[in-house]
Structures are given as structure tokens and as C-alpha cells.
Image (tube, rainbow over all chains, first blue to last red; front, top):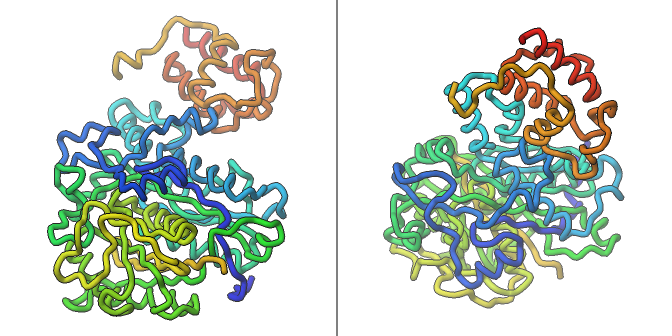
Amino acid sequence: MSVDTTVRTVVTGVGVAAPNGMGTEAYWAATLAGRSGIAPTTRYDASGYPLQLAGEVPDFEPEQHIPSRLIPQTDHGTRLSLYAADEALRDSTLDPGQLDPYGMGVATASSMGGFEFGQRELQNLWSKGGRFVSAYQSFAWFYAVNTGQISIRHGLRGSSNTVVTDAAGGLDAVGNARRQIRKGTTAMLTGGVDGALCPLGYAGQYSSGALSTAGDADRAFLPFADDAPGQVPGEGGAFLVLEDAASARRRGARSYGEIAGYAATFDPGPLPPGQEGTGLVRAIRRALRDAGTAAEDVDVVFADAAGVPDLDRAESRALAEVFGPGGVPVTAPKSMTGRLFAGGASLDLATALLALRDGTIPHTANVSRPGSGHPIDLVTGEPREADLRRALVVARGRGGFNAAAVVRRDA
Amino acid sequence: MSDANATVTGVTELTVEDLTRIMRESAGEDESVDLSGDILDSDFTELGYDSLALLETAGRISRDYGVELSDDDLDGIATPREFLTAVNRTLTAAA
């Protein structure tokens, strides 16, 4: 089926599971109040590990949100995904049962998969034997499982997929969803709710060399600061209901805004000094062109905000190259959640839409000013009010993934 | 094998109550189904259980009662009565 690039797509539903708030409005209120969800790890005994902090989604009781039949067969991350997908669908007021049977699909992003479940079953295998491994291990660990479980739960039989591009995935999934709608699907449930806060997940994350080892929760993840000590892993993210703008209008749906532009690029390996960020510049420029938006018309940038000095410098230089030094407000509310892997950029997209709605840029917590070598107007200290029409969300994934998306408020 | 997973020995008959309890624990329970009713001849799919749920339940029974339930033993089984017959045949043979 051909792709009709004149088809506009709008976000009609948002569902959030974040370390500083369960549910969209709880998260948004916490973010504007500067409340961080980074705290000592409780999901496993982290005392023997270099980092004992994480961004855990608090107070999540699976039995309150997840049907009994799904409890034995789901990883914690899948349960969070099902919660956020439910919320996004409810928020959209869209009834998938009213659509063509293949009218709605699911496009999610994942970085690892159901690792907590997988670790438990691997431990059963090696300590007790194969008979003690759950039959549900066959899919519960799998990185595509969230797409499958959401699809089954809500009967979403349309074209569906999963992307694995580390932290760029939160945008790549949405770009993918927009493409499906432009090929004729009416609506997509899309985004990422991710995380693997367990020793097996931690081992994979630790190999990046990017994890913080700081002990103070307020000083452990400081994007763009001179003394940025690295990353704190977290869990959660956001799902969006993305809809063909024409059909959303027909049913009188409220729109948070349009996914107006999207682009992805790939860095083919370690880049020579001075060239880091060139792939990111290309992704941003292509996303702007895709949106038909000039750089000066972007009102705020939600940064990837790695929290690692070299990566932060590459990003701030890329932003300065596109927008001019200090040319646009830049913020990193993920300073209050930690890095949510594939969930992070989806949560940033949701946050950008809420910022457009309320005319408020949430601030970067715990960072008083950008460090030297960061020619950016970083929003710090408190939220900044502004008339916001267009926001850019930037994301990078380990291994060379770059993605950028432009969201536009409805006129 | 750890003590916490010690098998139950000497059991020669699994009741429908045992089966219901094990299914609830290993595969959950569909909110729209009343498992406490007369379910012996209900189809597992009507009870909200798919083939994987049966596989998980069979695995759990194999572990807890120290019997072998092969895929062949479960082939074609559609109701709790058929399931119990297959399990109890194996239990009796093992006793």
C-alpha cells in the first residue's frame, strides 16, 4: 500500500506510567512541581552494585490494573505497558470496536524485553531444571511482547510492529505508527513503556559505561551540567493514540496536537572528534523539513539529555548548529525520571504535548545552569511560561540511532 | 531440587478442586467465568484458558506431584474432566 504523506496525524489520547507519577495528570503535576522519581532501588537488592538508584514507577499494584489471566504471563514492564495503553485509549474516547476490524494497530518500542521475568525463569532453569521454567517464558521475555499483549487485550488487529533502537525507539515507534496511518490504518496505539530494573537488565545497561555511580538521588543524573556523573536507569514511558486527523475530526475527538515531522538517521560507528552530533543535526533538519517548519518557528526542544559529558556536548553543539547558540529554550524533564530507554522519548513526546496545551515548559531539575561548552538556553529552576506552538523532541539510542520529531499544536 | 519445591507423593487422585486451584495459581482466572461452578464438562476455552494455560498447569502438576505428563497425554483434551482423567491415569500408574 502506498504512503500518502498528505495525511495528517493527531494525538487524541495519552497514557503515562512514570517514576514521578502514575497517570498523565499526576505525572504532569509532579513534573511542573519539580518532583523527581529517582530514589534508592527497591525492585532488587542493589547493595552489591555500583549504582543503587533508579527511577521506579511507585505504588503500582498489578492486581488493581491487570486482569488475573495476564498476571502469571507478564513481566513487570508489560504490566506497566498495559496500564499506560489502557489509559491512552480511555483518554482518546476511541472505541476500537467501532472501527474496521483492521482499522487500528499497535506500534511499540522496546530496548530489552521482559528481563525481570526472563531472569527469574533462567534462574529456575539453571538451579532447578527445565520443568520449573514457566510456559509463559516462551513470550514474556520477548521485546515484542508489549505490542502483542496490547493488541490482544484491545482487539487491535491492524498492522502492528515493534522497533528496537534503544532510546531512539520512543520516537521511531511513533514515526512508524504515522506511516501506518498514512498507508490507510485509521488509528494506532504507539509509543514505549520500557525498563528492566533487575540485575540482568542492569548488567546490560552497565556495559554502556554510561551509568552514574553517584549516591545522592538529586546529584546522580545531571544532563548538561559540568559535573554530569552519568545516567540513572528508570522504567515507564508513555503511549499515545495516534489518529488520522480527518477521522478524529469526524468523531469530534479532542486533539493534543499533530505529529507534524519525524526523521531518523544512523551514525555508522564512532565519529571522529568534532563530528559527533552530525547525524543528530541531519535528523533534526529532516524532521523540521518534514514538518514544513523553519528552525526559528520551533518554540521549545525536549533534549535527549544523556547526562554523559561527551554525549551532552555533542547534543548541545548540534542544537546550537541548527538553532543558533541559545536560540531556543531547551529542557530535560527526564532529569526527574532517569533514562527510560525506549520509554523516554515517548514520555518526552507526551510531555511536549502537555507543554503545548498549557503553555508551560517544564524545567530541568537539579541543574542550576548548563555547563561550559553548552551553548544552549536550558530551562532550569522552575517551569517557564511561553506561547508554545511547535516543539521538537530529540532522542538518541546507543549504537548510533538518532531520531527527531516535531509536534504542532492545533491552530 | 530445593525443599520449597518438594513433590507431593502418594496422591492417586487429583480432584476438580485441586485442578481449579492450580489453574488459578498458574494461569490466573478470567473475571467473567465462575470456576467454582460445575465446570467438569465445560470447554477450557469457555473457561478462559488457552493451550498455553494448560501447558503451564500440566507443568505445575508434573512438578508438584512428581509425574510425567507428556504432550501426547494432553493431546486432544478439551475439558477439566478429560484433563483429570489423563492426570489421574498417570498418578495411578506412578503410585
